[in-house]
Amino acid sequence: MVSYIMASKHNNSILGRIVLAILIASFFTPNLTYAEKSKIMGFEMNAIDKCWRSDPEWRKNRPQLATCSVGYAGKMTNNIGEGLIHYKVIDPSDDAINPKPGTLRYGASVIQGKVWITFERDMLIQLVKPLLISSFTTIDGRGFDVQIANNACLMIFKATNIIIHSIGIHHCKSQAPGIVIGPNGKVMPLGQVDGDAIRLVSASKIWIDHNTLSNCEDGLLDVTRGSTDVTISNNWFKFQDKVMLLGHDDGYVRDQNMKVTVLYNHFGPNCNQRMPRIRHGYAHVANNFYLGWLQYAIGGSTEPSLKSEANLFVAPTSGRKEITWRKDNNQNRNGGEFHSINDIFENGASFIATKGGKVRKPNYTKEQVFIVADAKSVRSLTRASGVLRCGKTIC
Image (tube, rainbow, N blue to C red; front, side, top):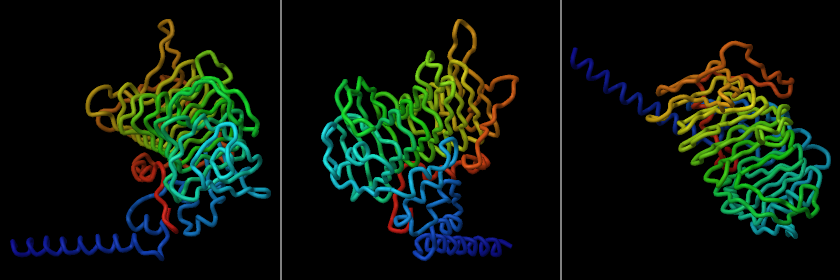
């Protein structure tokens, strides 16, 4: 009997090594698509990534990306089609007033109309003033290591139909008032700007996907002053105090119309608060991975509404385990309605949900709707969050 058991263990060990060798060989076999390799390895791609990452010709079919967005941004097909200008950034330098052709600012602010911006090579871009992005612009960093860092960063000001994809944005700094090229291609004055990675001001139909954001003076992503129809997906937020703000301030009632989808993102390590903090509007927060927090993960004030659905919350090993925070006003709880549906809580995490009332549905249109996955799949669905490392055929 002992010999049989020992032989069985030996055979199982050999079998395990063979299976592992097959899996590794399969993953690096060039004839298989990424989707096929992911299936063999047991990985699961989310609904957005399945739309384009399985295409080995993704470099030739870059505009296909615009058909893959879900959530409140909807499909971004206004950014492609007839009249689309393909623009390549070849120069990492910057001039806030007279940008040179070939620089990012020239493509994102000076050229008007449908513009699809790509990059010639790896780049570290240090903007001298915030970059104000024009409507119908896509910034597509896939295939290269593109970083915007160490000074001013991105602003979407009174613009619509914008995609920001596969950009690393970090160490953004506040900016004194100055003069810049505006989103209409004309010089304009710009007041004091906080050190945010991406700030939306009176913007609409915005998709922010597969970016890595960290280490900024203020926040990583602000959606403010009446901005709406925003999807924030597949991003990696890390090493930050204030992460994501939805709603300008408690007194800005126009944000009551704000609708934001927060989907497939990875929060952590070392994120403190605001994942997101919401004021006034509505947010659908689904299939995100929360790797700890210090103060709280989800907070709110001035009667917002938030549906947390099928997220994975892993509480920190020590400190505060509660996920939510509401602002008190004269002892009255006005943090809004927070509902948790099919979330998974690990390491003692807890969610104080609003008692009573109906859970507000997102009411997505046909082009916005998506199927929320089981929270057990969140680790796999968010495995590729942040900037992608893309090869010639695999991304």
